[in-house]
Structures are given as C-alpha cells and as structure tokens.
Amino acid sequence: MMSEKASVLQVCVSRAQSLAGLVEYSEDSIVSKTILDKPAGTITLFAFGKGQKLSEHTAPYDAVVQVLDGQASLTIGGEEKTVVAGEVVIMPGNVPHSVAAPEKFKMLLTMIRA
Image 1 (cartoon, rainbow, N blue to C red):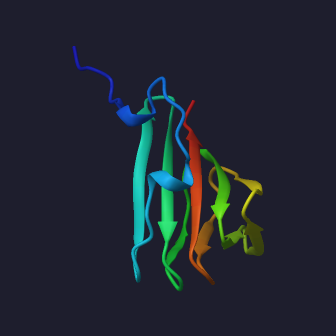
Image 2: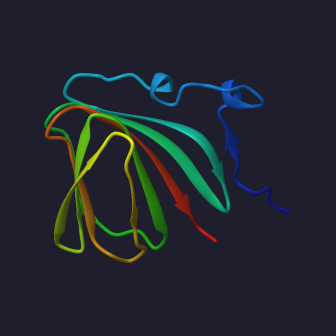
C-alpha cells in the first residue's frame, strides 16, 4: 500500500508565524516555500522579484491567491486584475491564468484539490 503524499512546514505546527516573514525576496527570481502539501490541497508562499512572472497556464483545481506584500498583476481568463496586499482572489480551475510582478510582491496560494 502506497502512503499518501504529505509534507508540512514544521515551524508552523502549533506555533503562530508571520506569513510574509516565512519567505524572503531574491532579486530576479521567484522563491516558493510549501507550508502544507496533502492530497486535499496545498498551501504555498511565493515571493516574486520585480519583473518576474509565471506564464499563462491552467490548473485543474481552484486556487486562492492572497497578496501579503506589494501588488500582483493577475490575468484570469484573459482579464487582467491588480491585487494588492490584504486582498484575495480565486482563480477558478481549468481557466487560463498568469501572474506578473510589476513590483516585488509576496502571496499565499491555497490550492484545493478535492
């Protein structure tokens, strides 16, 4: 019997942490840190350097984007949206989307698989 895929960022287990403080910016790159990865979904932090982007793609699951710092440019189904720190947006499953950083920003991405 195969075990289910699961990983947990231990520093967060039973302890409060600053989300934005768990991932650092790196100039000219995108840094990611997985907080939780289980069969039902994932929670991942991202720090985008200014000018970085994820090209258009689709995912079979809904994803919730929470911007923690700065502002992001999201294109969802061909419609561009600016999302700033403190805001949240849902990227629906099977809808093409892309992410761009007009300035550096941090986001929390929660993907629900089930």
